[in-house]
Image (tube, rainbow, N blue to C red; front, side, top):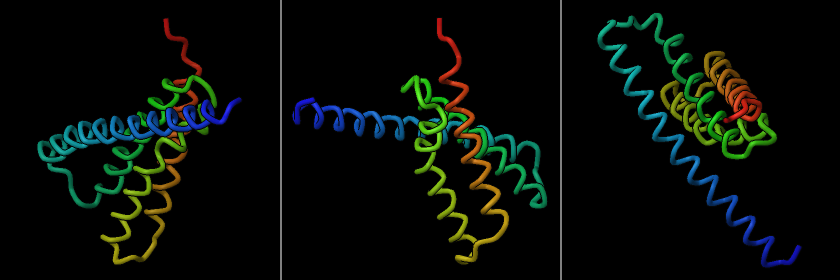
Length: 131
């Protein structure tokens, strides 16, 4: 493969990744808005907020992984994990800031859940036959 084609392929992949991250952020905002409305209407207590946020992060991670899997159509587990890394990093940073930079079990559980569900989303999207 020529040097020009190789650089063009890398540029195209980076461009696709950036577009996918923008779409992931928009999807996250839509899902977050829906979850916020549900939380306000249902008056969710602070005791159950961890579970509630874990469900939110899990859904967002699954959707991010699925969007990457649909785009690539191969290597679903890798695409899913890589596509959700920026959002997972943002969740971890915000959690650490809110927790005075003290890692705890909740942050680890959230990260693992998000990583696993983004990989599952990528696998599901790659293996679904689109008609």
